[in-house]
Length: 386
Image (tube, rainbow, N blue to C red; front, side):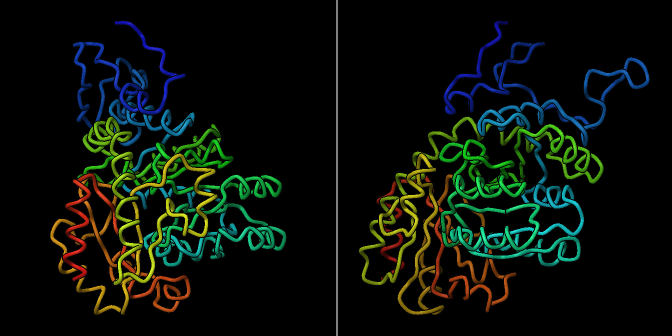
């Protein structure tokens, strides 16, 4: 079987071919799932690179190869959830580390940092779109890590990755970017200077709302070895079947992201002109406060939209209850359109005063635009808003 040279290909091609080479034994175009827990050894300690699936699995290896290629990374570590990936990252830091974290992050991230790791590390929550605030904090304290979400969840704030990583390097501070909202198709933080990229594979990478998983990608071998050792010790590895499903989902990431963006842009523009909408936040709109930064560091604007209805919780609840095509559900990034209320659902673990201080009010609604016909989606929203 001919070996393909895949290193210089575009991302859409890599997603289909890297890690998806035909099975050597049978020639099967779609590689089989290695649904096994253990592997035969020819002599004690002598094996073919696989001894126990918590440590390594051929299906997971294929997925990690594909993911690393998509983010232009040397290494990828896949986990059983996005939260598991974040947990490994926190364990990899020296105890007592000072960590800068965005003040508008996924509620699960905030909960993990403030309830599980609050005695291990010191978290400084600030607006990471404010470069001066980051600069000031780096001068005042020894910071081990800057945790960036860009765009943020749910307010879609855009942080300037290049400027922040440049500042961080001068202070020997590592930067991790949660790239879940953009996917590797629209944004590559490692190219912009980040040290680590994190994704919830549950979302766009898998794209079909049937897997929970996470991944960390990086180029530093020593850090990779440390995180892998932690994963092997703690055990939150991605299962063979979940790995196979994500590998399958990745093949259509390019076409899905284009479709998500096309629909989101049309919906965002329509919402912006609607009399019952107070404000729309979407990176592709010129009204977005960091639109120029988004245009500079992203090749597309994604499928996530946040908007504020006129009124309060009562009015927002009516919209959420009346949609029929949009599924009222947590999560995002699947082929189907989802709608949710962050204050009650995804960000409920953040205290109300902190939510409202960052701008997450009761009239805020978040949309994950799917790949259905966009006119049907707009009609669904129109009927709900009536």
